[in-house]
Image (cartoon, rainbow, N blue to C red):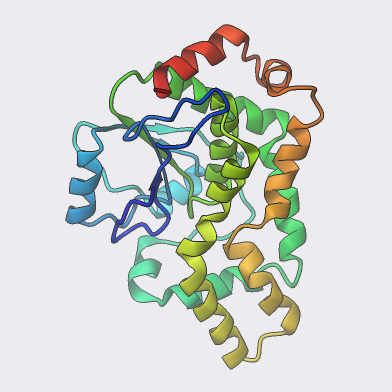
Length: 263
């Protein structure tokens, strides 16, 4: 369910999903968002209404330094860098306040010289590397131990590191592959307007066609990215074997996790 925030376009409550054993994920327990550095006072009050207890920040320290989250009293902030570092330029709060978002996104795309899709595929493979999965295990551990209130998790745009986190936790809870993919692709609804403006700006400035083609693939999500995660899971005969082998998560862990979040 979408959460309407002024300073964060890609926010939603993961409650309501039906699982394979006919249970539902509880509302106001697990929230996925983009970065929370531009929250307004109204946004803070909305998040308080979700009884927010913890915020898990999946960004690198460099990016956090450039765009630190708005701090909400009584909320615990936890840093879990899913990747060690990124070879992209961090955007500062000043950039967001002084430059159009289309200009920021276009500058980001230009840095890849027409190799944006290739970079994204490599990035997703990094997310499910042993290092990445070890960080996602910490993320799941925190969720498992949070027995009241909600936890929000995010990266920069709330689409890739956050998207993989959502794929893993929804798979763990027993949500169908179709519903997991639909949630993953909902990001494109949130960023559609920004992408269209970025494409228009690129064409206005005479940017090459290859870079223009890359814009939605770099600033949105695509089924082929999710499939990288699904393909790793599908190497196993069932999801339980995947979680045990790749993340050390056993049957009791899954049972406790479900008990905490399903009704």
